[in-house]
Image (cartoon, rainbow, N blue to C red; front, side, top):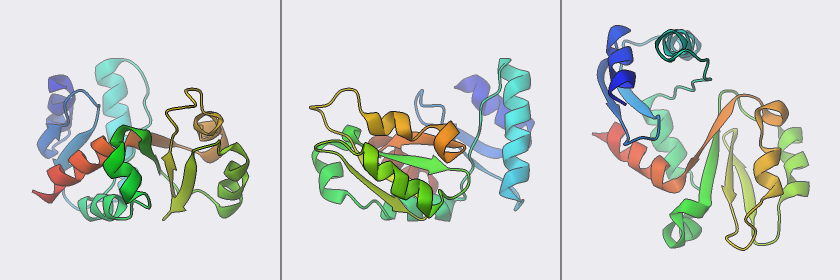
Amino acid sequence: MSDLRAMAQGLGLSNPRTLVATGNLVFEAQETEIAVLEGRLEAAFEATFGRHVDIIVRRANDWLMLAAGNPFPAESAAAADQVAVRVMRKPVPAEAVAALDAYVGKDEKMRAVSGDIWVVFSRETPSSRLLAATSHKRLGVGTSRNWNTVRKLAEMVAK
């Protein structure tokens, strides 16, 4: 994670911080277009670590809204590691969300909120069809984070 922070500093990003070994980076930057910043970070990541990774950037207020919009607060309180959000680069179209309904298993829940996909996974079903259905190929560029990570990142950006 220290290499990730150094990479961010090399791009001129201020106060880079990471959340343990999650690969999540919180930083301060001059106002810029998100897509431009994502491209700069992806290029720097590839140059630094030797492989391409899709990077999704959210402004602090957007991340706080994402965390506040968790549609499964009771489930998150009971089993934070079983609740996840697929954070999308571009909002998931309504027809793609509707198609996901067919993959929601017993004891699972799924809801789209502001273009991201929230899921409650079942401990009883270790291999979720829904997890596989939320792939890049089906929905576009996105990354999944469990509630613990979402909450901790919200705490970091709120400071």
